[in-house]
Image 1 (cartoon, rainbow, N blue to C red):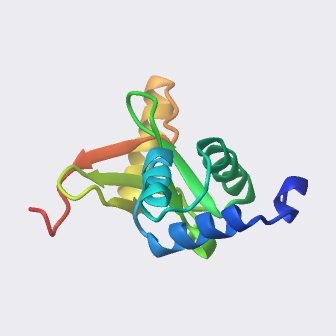
Image 2 (image 1 turned 120 degrees about the horizontal axis):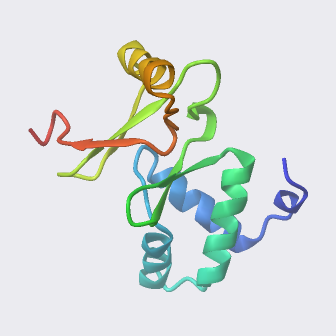
Length: 136
């Protein structure tokens, strides 16, 4: 854990509570700032960005960067995509849900691309777009 993470401010606690309330969803730093403004809470934009990055370093939050360079964040707590299994992601274009996939077939595709084409996929930055079961 990073040294700077030991210092917990009121704003850090509020941010963590907000992210926990949105477990399973992804949010942008702008979403977080808008929420705090709506609640009348004094949390600055730079604090939000800085604290989100610290939480990414701590492994509590995952950061996903899609096309266009905008990042979204997801509270993962104990459920991070870590360990020996690869974790791929699907994003529903209907409801915005981010789905974590542990799929052997996708791992085979990743292996094929590496072996046959010399291209290595980064599963944490690869997002498949489409419609989830609920939105279909």
